[in-house]
Amino acid sequence: DAKTTQPPSMDCAEGRAANLPCNHSTISGNEYVYWYRQIHSQGPQYIIHGLKNNETNEMASLIITEDRKSSTLILPHATLRDTAVYYCIVRVPVNNAGNMLTFGGGTRLMVKP
Amino acid sequence: DSGVTQTPKHLITATGQRVTLRCSPRSGDLSVYWYQQSLDQGLQFLIQYYNGEERAKGNILERFSAQQFPDLHSELNLSSLELGDSALYFCASSVRGRALLYEQYFGPGTRLTVT
Image (cartoon, rainbow over all chains, first blue to last red; front, side, top):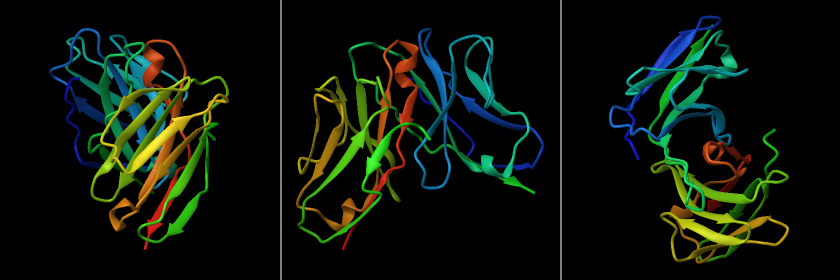
């Protein structure tokens, strides 16, 4: 699986967009990018995933560069409740095999009033 | 609410004891995963079951074991407990379907404290 690199921490003002980068320069053609977050001591929460195209759901948008070597998770209007550790994970989904998630250090996002 | 339930929420026990953590996956999910989160190790995968069968193992100690029952709930058994086993234990479940395999839904966790 491709290795990911994320900044250890970021701050964002409440109401502003939070843009969380992830570098995955060794990603292969069939690897998806997944984003999760973990609010303090709660179970991790799935946010979004993508392969090539940009994706949007009710929680966030995922922008993947054309060469797929990096991506950005965008929280359009960050609130205090978005303060969490955000994890970028790259995996190849393979049926009938182990599908465990491997969590790195993530980015600790602090949303400030 | 992810739809995954875990019991108990908190567990305090002594070294050398044995405990059982229980997880009920979301309705319809066949895969159950167990993860451990300690302060110094971060989130680590322990073991996965799919429809009652062990599918993958991570860094799970020999003192730990798990199983998934016909009704798809799962139990994680921890024995000969040591202080270092104190951690948050999360269970997750996922649906079938390629890209969705990593769309996992986590329970609230069980906080285990070994004294």
